[in-house]
Length: 280
Image (cartoon, rainbow, N blue to C red; front, side):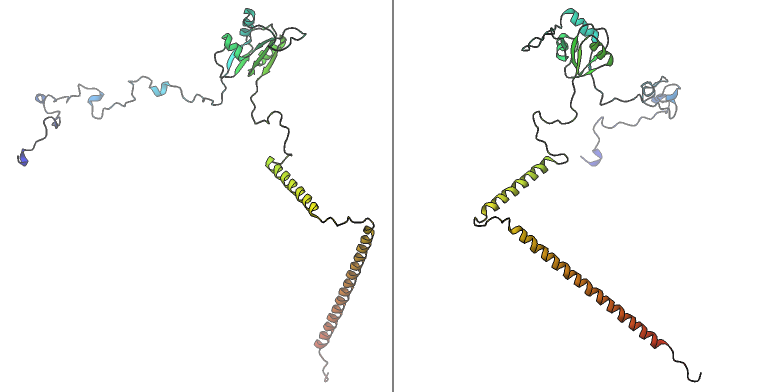
């Protein structure tokens, strides 16, 4: 085999289509573009988003219509009228809690909460908070426990002699029940404990020093106190006298210095005064 015998594999390379070269070639006259029309012209291209003239998709869909609130609370909603219907059907019965003595005023009101309504089929989920709305009428006293109440629902329940109880979720940490030891205001617990430790150590060192003191040291006699007071008064008087003498000496020295300065000034003035001429 020689270099001029090398050829590409059959079918791997095809010749370029030459259009507009006569009818016999099969691609003459219209050159495969058909007769007339936008696509038959030079540069006649249609954008991918063009839909033939109808309203395009980007104009049909709504835009700038608010936002989705990430803090929205999804409630399980129930109306007062639905609860009253269950009471009329007898699915919610009144009575005291087990283990509680019956009151003299009669049977306890019917208790309604999220678990009871879930068992009755009025709500579907327990992982969402429940809100009671005021749709319908109520004539039975109920004790309703829920996460939220509308104003009309609260008024209707209380108007029928019932009670509402709102479940509150604490927004901040609270101390444990039964814990009464609190640090003073404005002082952190760690600082309070440190102060208590320092006071304890100081008291211990004082007790140790008093225990190590010699036993032969007698307490100070009460009669010796006046003598000590007299000696202190005498020392104070001596100190005041010495201070007065020092002040007087300093005053005398200042006066002498002032006299010397005055004498020197007069002498300098005499030397500067010119003598009169004899001829005059």
